[in-house]
Structure formats: structure tokens, C-alpha cells
Image (cartoon, rainbow, N blue to C red; front, side, top):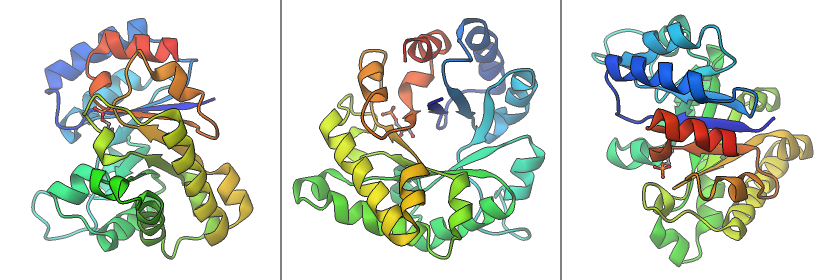
Length: 247
Ligand code: 13P
């Protein structure tokens, strides 16, 4: 079954999430895909409550690169697990650019998430300048190698890679099928060369960036992809349920 992961970003109060869950669960076909909802921290408890009887997984959007202690405002891996979280997004371009997260921090976060038995959704993708200067593959390779440094091959089973070109995020301009297939193939080659052909073949690779009800079917059928990571289009409960039902 393919994966559909929703990244709510910084949207939704506890009350909004409650209303969202009631509508979403009444409309979505849960057997269409393996669904994960990555909610804001403050909505995790209400998400857990509503999703407990469903096949839908609870996800978070971030975790600290520190394990415990004097880090005001931070949330660690252990806390996420105790809040019922199964998966966590790491390396999103918004965190890389707006919060200055470098590859060392991303690598640390992945190791802490895995140590806590969380699944990792690792985002990689090039900027528009990198795309225009033909640096897409180089960028993806560097991001992957730096993020996955020191991981054991069996740990990759709990890592999903999301190819999210920065220029496609929230722009209304998704990558073409050709561009997606080109990047996904490159991601699989890096995993195959650095870990094993099995890792290259079996690691889950998703696409994210301006996915809508209109392009979802096409994108889901791109070669060698295992699903999608959705931002803006997940925010309307009815709209997202129909996107999943259409996929
Ligand atoms: P959009 O679907 O809004 O382009 O966002 C994609 C994204 O950043 C998901 O992580």
C-alpha cells in the first residue's frame, strides 16, 4: 500500500484539530493508503484520541537534536513517543532555511528519533537556483549522505525519504512526472551505492510539493515512488479526504 503523509505545518488550534478529525474520519477511506497525520505538538493529544481506533498514524513535524535537559521550549524523542507519535519529519526545507538546521543537526535528530524507535520522514530537495544550475542531483546526494551518515542499513527500514523540491513547495507548481522520476531514481542510486542494492530498492521514497486533487492520481503513479507528502492540500478535512479517496 502507498503512503500518504500530511504535514499540517503551523496550522490548527486544539479546537480546529478536533473538528478536523470528526469530518476527516467520517469522509476518508482509510484503506486507500497508509495515512500519517503530522500535527502541531499542541494537537497531538487530540489527534491521538481520535486516531486511536483507526488505521491512521500519528506524526510530529520536528524533534530536538538533544536528548534531555536544559533546552527551554524543546521536545525530545522520548516525549513524542509518550504522546503516541509514531513518525517524525526531519530536514524539512522550512526548518533548514528558516531555522538554520544544518546537516549535522539533521543527522543528530535522525539518530535520536531512531534510538527512540520513531519512524523518520527525511525531506530532501533542491532550491530553484540549484535546479537552474543543474545541481539537483548533487544537492540531493549531499543532503542524503550527510543526513544518513553513520546509520546502519537495517535502520533505513524506518526511514522514509521525501523528495520535496523547494521551488514546488506551496508554489502551486508541482514537479513534472519526469522530474520526480529523475530525482527518485537518483535517491535510490545513492542508497544503493552507500548502503546496498536492497536499500536502494526497498526504501520508501515519496514526493511532496503542490499536490492537489487534480494532480494526485498522476503523481501517485510515477515510477518507483511509494507515496506523497502533502502540505497545503491537507488543511481542509473534506478536501484532503477526497484527495486520498481519489489517489
Ligand atoms: P505543499 O503541499 O503546500 O506544497 O507543501 C509541501 C510540503 O512542504 C510538505 O511537507
